[in-house]
Image 1 (cartoon, rainbow, N blue to C red):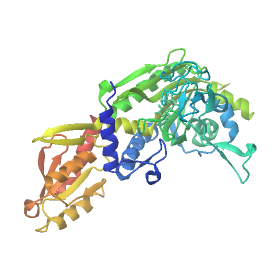
Image 2 (cartoon, rainbow, N blue to C red; image 1 turned 90 degrees about the vertical axis):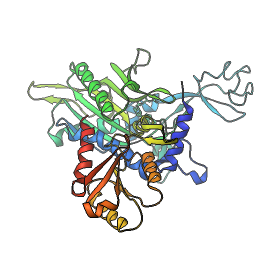
Image 3 (tube, rainbow, N blue to C red; image 1 turned 135 degrees about the horizontal axis):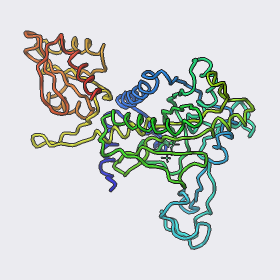
Image 4 (cartoon, rainbow, N blue to C red; image 1 turned 45 degrees about the vertical axis):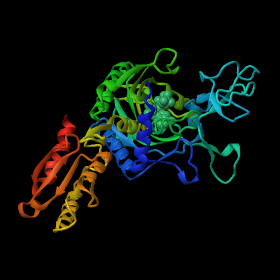
Length: 448
Ligand code: ATP
C-alpha cells in the first residue's frame, strides 16, 4: 500500500536539511523540476561515482564518454523518437487539467458529451486524445523556424551510438566492449510526480555493450546479474529489489528481451533501471539514416557485422530517491523520536562530524585542528552549537556515519570518542589513528 506519509516526511526532511529543493521555489516552483542542495549534490555525486567506478574504472572492456545534450535532429528521426516518443493526452477544456488517455479515473468516451473530467467533474469538457511528443524542442541559431528545430535529448544512449566508431578507433577496444555515459536527459512528462522519481529534467547512467550477433543473449544475462549486484552493493534492503520482465505487449518492437530492476518505494514497486537486449536496431537505424557504414570488422575471424547492443540504463535521480527512501527510519530513543538516514557509509554526503563537547578549555581549537586534518581524507562537518545530543541528532538526520567528539581527555590523552550512527555506541580512538579508523570502517562496509 502506498505510504504517502513517509514520502511527505522524506520530502520535508530533504528540504530542511538541504538535500533537495523545488526548482525556482520563490516564483512558485517549476513543475517536476528539482534542485540538489549541499547534501543532495554530494549524495547524488556519490551514486554517480560509484556507478562510474564499477562500470568504467573497474573494467578493461568499457570506455567512458560525455556527449553533448544537443544533437543533430536526424538522430531523433533515426532513433524513432520523433515519430514514436509520444503519449496520447486528453485535456479538460473547463479546468485545464491534462490526463493520459489510459488514466483509469476517466469515465465515458473522451470527446463525447458523456465523458466526465476526473478533477472538476464537468461532463463533455474532455477533448479527444491527442498525441503529445515528450521531447523538449528548441531552436538553434537566430531564426525560430522549423528548419532550426532541435531537441533536448530524452536519453543519453544516442550519443553513444553515434560515437561508437570514434570510441572504437581511439581506444583500440574490440567487440565485445562497452561505452558508458552519465548525463542529463529531458522529457516533457505528462504525469510527472513522486518527488524526484519522475521529473522533466533528470540524469541517466547508461551503458551500451556492443557484442557479436549470437552472443547477445548470453551477455544480456551477465549484465542482468552485474547490475542487480550493483544495486545490492548500495546497501538497499534486498527484499525491496526485484525483477520485472517485459511481457510481449510491453516489449519495444525491436527489443529481443527487457527486464526492469524495480524497487518498492513508499508509493509502490517501480522501475529504477532497465536492461535491454536491443539487437542491431540502433546501429542499423543510424547506418540507414546517416548513410555511413557502422559495421565492425572482426580481424581475427575476418568478418564484418553490425554489433548487437545490450543496454543498461539507470536514472541517477531515481537511484538517489531509492537510497533516501531505503535509508529513512524513525526510532524511539529515551522517549524521543530519532530520525536517521542510515546511508551506506560510502554514499553518505558527510562521513564524519567533529564536535567539541563544550565551547571552552581549548576544545574548539583542538576540534578545528582535527576537522582540518580529517577533511583531507573525506567530507567532514564541524559543529559546536547546542547540546551534544542535539548535534548527534542533526548528524543522524544528515546520515553522517561517524561523530567525533573532542572532550576533556582529548588534550591529555590524545584520544577522541567516535560515536557510530546506527548503534549509537562509542569507541575511544587515539587521535593519530582516527583517519584510518574511519577509512577502515567505510572500506569494511564496502566489502560487506
Ligand atoms: P518509465 O516507464 O518510468 O517512464 P522508461 O521505461 O521510460 O521509464 P527508460 O527510457 O528505460 O525509462 O529510462 C531508463 C531509466 O531512466 C529509468 O529506469 C529511470 O531510472 C530513468 N528515467 C526515465 N525517465 C525518467 C524521468 N522522467 N525522471 C527520472 N528518471 C527517469
